[in-house]
Length: 356
Image (cartoon, rainbow, N blue to C red):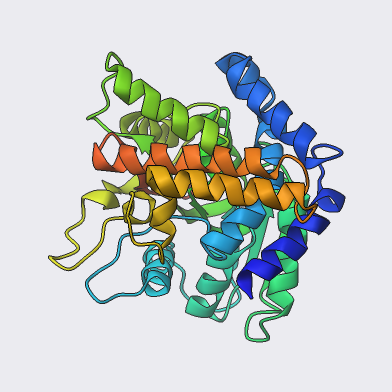
């Protein structure tokens, strides 16, 4: 049933593209941005880079990963879905929200999986999700309305998080889950979040970062870094220490910072990158990451194109996402990369006027 739904959605995909007229041209343009253009060019064209990436990747993400486009480790006997929700709730618990009727911003919301989880966690607040990609807005709002528990509490809107369509001091809290890594300037996006938050409000984020174990002179490390960038729509990847300094430069007080990838999840737990590591079990998604599974997956998607069940360019898109899987999986194994560097910042309260 899930596979048939994917095929049906693939046939509709080209009508929903906002980055190009068809999938094949979109993936070619995306590859050119990474393979033929410089970092400076990618930063200048970040909106094209990110919008094209999510035009191409969103369907595959939802089919293969679910409605929450992020990683999480799992405790022993914890299901994939349970680990995902817990990861959302941990971040929500850092927002310092008390009382009813607060306005919360999800920066880079995807199709809104975490937003819906966090809305159920709080129940009494309004959450607005911001994403650059119009397909994700439409799909997110469609899923919001399918859940009567949170239908009135969640909405997705289209916009650029470097230039948010919101007033100053509009939100009581904000969070981002593996999203601001797409920004061409981390200080810039943090300053925009700072602008729309009320004084005293918290911002909590999970960031994609290079760790202190990354060696820029190591060719294998550089290869992994490039695979992650190319496969995940990133202009560049910065270090954890740089990320924290950028948050401070934007004006936030840092309340907490740590890499959750280093958490102790027990002897029966599973690391965040496990779904991306090769396995010979043909009944898991990990099968595609061994040499045989890689070829079979590529052949299957190519055959869908030949039979006109998927638009031309789908196989190239799938190969791009497999490269992302290899990069993230190996980045996790070598501990040079983390997708869950936790940062919690607070916008300072305004200083009282002299004499008050």
